Structures are given as C-alpha cells and as structure tokens.
Length: 140
Image (cartoon, rainbow, N blue to C red; front, side, top):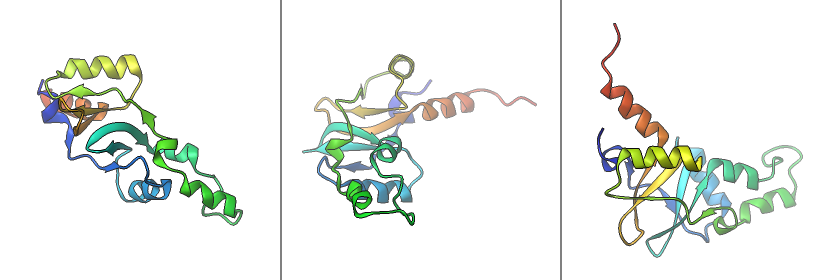
C-alpha cells in the first residue's frame, strides 16, 4: 500500500476561523469536496464540513420564506461551527494508521500535518478505497 502522502489530496483548501459561513458556502457551492481545513497562522485549528455548514445555516435561505434572521446565519464565523483540535496524521504515518482512525473515530477525513501542525494535505476514506481498487486485478 502506498504512503498516505501519496494518497492524500495536496494543498487542501482552507479558511480562517474568522471567515464567515457565507465564504464557506461559496466554496462548497463551487467544489466537489466536503471538508475545509481551518488554518490560523499556518497552523491547523479545525475542520469544517459541508454537513456542519448545512446544520448552521437556516433552511429558509434562498426560499420565499427567507427573512433577515435567516440571512444572518451566513454572518456566523467559522470558529463558531468548526470541529476544534481535529484528529490528524503526521507525514510518516502509514495507511493502516489512517484506517484505524477512520474506524475508531468515525471521521470521514484526516488532515495530514508536518511537525509544526501545518497542513500538508487531507486524506479521505475514499482516497484509501480508490488505492485499494487500483491495487486489485480486474475481474474478467
């Protein structure tokens, strides 16, 4: 099995703890991934998922029932919603370390950080599944 650095997505998209949920929504509306790293002073502070965003925003946004109060949910800050101190892996971790974390912690992504807690990439369980599929010979 390849190293996690070969499987992870490099240069992950990140936001600041002080960014608004409007910024996060705009990013998620334009991309196909489901997690953003929250970075402050180049250090990993947390993770925010599209599910976290969905829970934090009013369901009336963009509907005829939308009110000023609904629009205000877009002004919430990332630090109010993010998962703090996320589980992460160091560059030297092995794929089985990631598998154990996915199974034990119930997370769907794991940031990969250097020794200074600076994010280098993000690993999803899908990345591992895709690597496994490539490793197996195709059935005829």
